[in-house]
Image 1 (cartoon, one colour):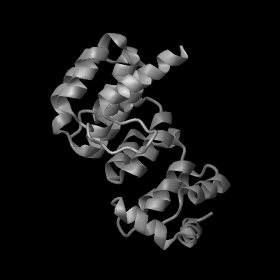
Image 2 (cartoon, one colour):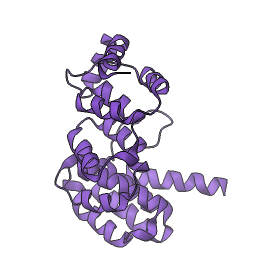
Image 3 (cartoon, rainbow, N blue to C red):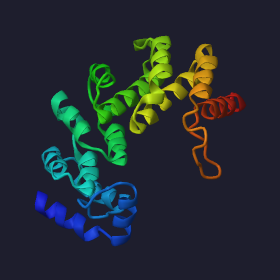
Length: 224
């Protein structure tokens, strides 16, 4: 399938209702307004097409970028290409898909994590802290957890909202997974108060770190 054919198909799947929904969440005019399920269906037909994925990404169209993420081969991206992709996308929903479907499966993420977490670019820092949160869960031996808690305590309150979200995830992950650091993680969360009053739907867990940590630990203890 060519780029033109793919974009035409996406455009045909778009709706005004979805465009309005996206606009409320910060998406600009470069979109078709395609439902996530329809994007997944198109990706399922294409399977993997890395060349087409790169062309779709370069359009900066939100729907094209969602599709590109699903059909690209992470192993074929250079460090520079992936870094530029992260830097170029400001819509956090796309950024989260990029992390879940591409960055997590990319080789040598630790070298990228250590670079990105120090970046002054908001989206690179956001991705760097996403990788750090994942590393807490999967490869904690690579991390100096007390030093990370120090950084979270001193930097999170003044960080951009996009970065705060993944820093907060790191804080919660440390508190949930490491009983020896749980008290400190809870204290940091209480002192900073980030997401204390965050609205959540019924049955969902608050992202406020103390509530998040205590709730997940409670569930784990119930099933132990």
